[in-house]
Length: 120
Image 1: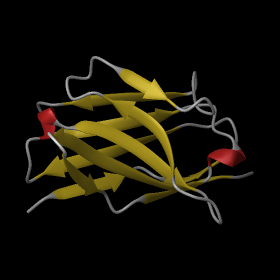
Image 2: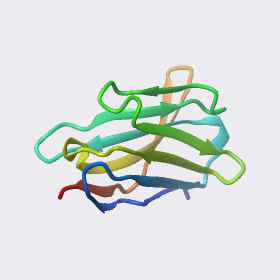
Image 3: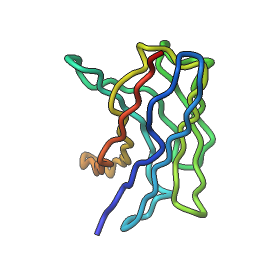
Image 4: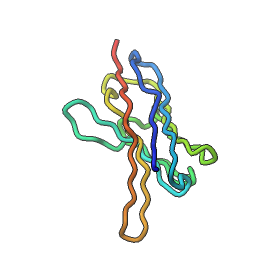
């Protein structure tokens, strides 16, 4: 059974930090790209950060570059999103996503989401 369990969200003041975790099971974690998405109230879900299966390549949305760091531990099947210098605009539900393409077939798994609220 595939599971992505997301944790680490919470309420933080502007300028603060949070570290999200995404623990995976039920599939070969090390062969999947891991993505972090977020969805703010009334807005569409947006891609925030991506890390390649080997961890050798990362990409970030312009809005979080220099503040968020994406990492993964393939030995422990866990992905992380370190979020620093948080702003109120970072508020939303954060989802981890595992994605892999095999030919034309896409394999997509989603975590349950964790709420991040940045407010004073």
